[in-house]
Length: 402
Image (cartoon, rainbow, N blue to C red; front, side, top):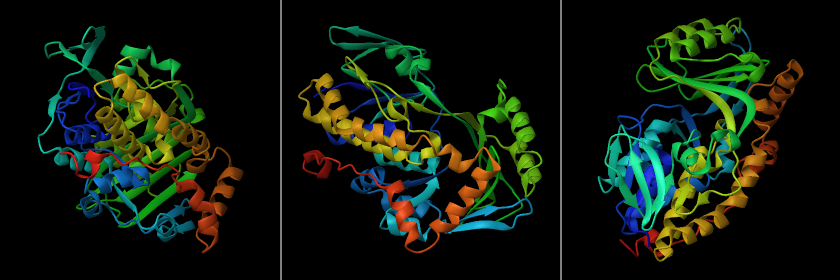
């Protein structure tokens, strides 16, 4: 198999791939543009094929220990009264208990710890050039000396640097879904409601709060494109000002949330989009996770799909006999049709989070109430959370090869 593999991106996809490559006898190189591990991030609900990969890595007990026992979702009116409540018991039942809510950064931390220093990780650097050569790919970096690799994996997110270098400008592959999303954490937020997602929505705008351990809370915001009104955001401070303006007048705790936003240090703000590509590889260069097949931030399984893809890609590289292009074709055969279906089903999810009209908001709230009724919840939730994909078993993935 390919003996030298460069992974661009030290997030969920890149770290999972490195773990499984090490199990297959390869010591990969990870280059991460951040000066340190990205441990911040928003709350994710983790289940499905990625949960299966985490089980095979022996991580699930630790993920549940780090996770949060979210028992219900409350949709609130302008004074904080519940308009609809959905117990997560129905979701747990639909998933057979194989479900946990946790911060994305905590998942990244556990994946890095699982590597146990068995992969070379270069922080604070990025690939600047990729050139095909007789022995694979010559990668040039901003700071490190150039190196030749048998294969290069772009696991560097929606705005993938590797994808742009190998396939061209991202505009050809990015499909906007008509919404924007923001997330941040803040210390010392005065209101505490452990185990609950609290959500306030008006047409085209939603804000969600979740209590964390200690004194922290995490916040998630969804805005329809028309709220943005073609506004250009040039800096984090511009984003804070715009978000404060967009959220004003929503009632509930929004003035306190705007104050928390001002003192936050980890604001994420980006358009909600999908990455659609006819193929995920070109020669000895391949894309993984959001860089290749992001279903959208609102679809809920980005981390899960990244881990599943990493597991399959590592398995096919191990089985390829040193022919990475053969491995890449097999990786796509296993996953592409599945991800195409998932992307199609994700197209309408923005309207669930932040309906654009009052009628849409009423319908969303009614469906939420219906989902809380025993029996009806299975009919509504099971199709939404089902992952009809069987992950292959590779000999080294079950301990037969170390």
